[in-house]
Length: 140
Image (cartoon, rainbow, N blue to C red; front, side, top):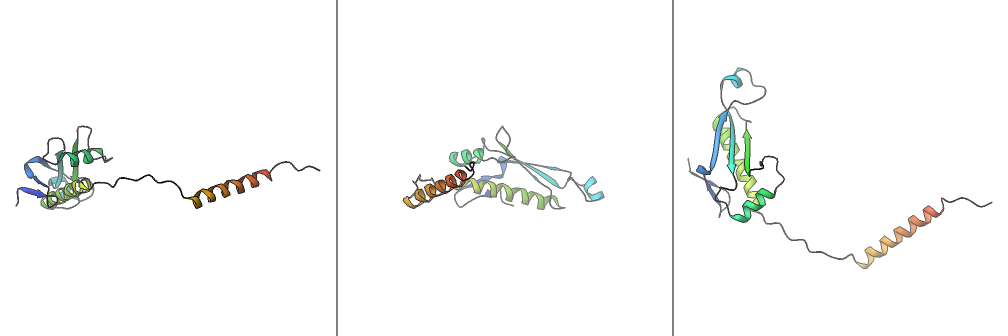
């Protein structure tokens, strides 16, 4: 097995930076759940990693509940019955999370509303004002 996790063509992580621990899975599964440690807890310290600084900042800025206040990304994989498949699933989910943080968001350019949009807005306001004026008391 490779000692490196490939994220993109430019970014790869040594597996030494990723801490994985096997534990018993939760939920239904019969006796197998009670005696086999098939679930995997993956812990990845973002601050201590070899990721580029801009990628680290975007990863930490995400509103992801899996990232602790210390900057550690925790992924729990327990979908499969075998520990090896859960390990691969956890590594794949880590790679997808980091890959999503490598995308630089486009800067929004502020624009002003066009003349037609302004006119439609004013027409709507006038119509609403007329509707409200009709709600007044009627003079006999």
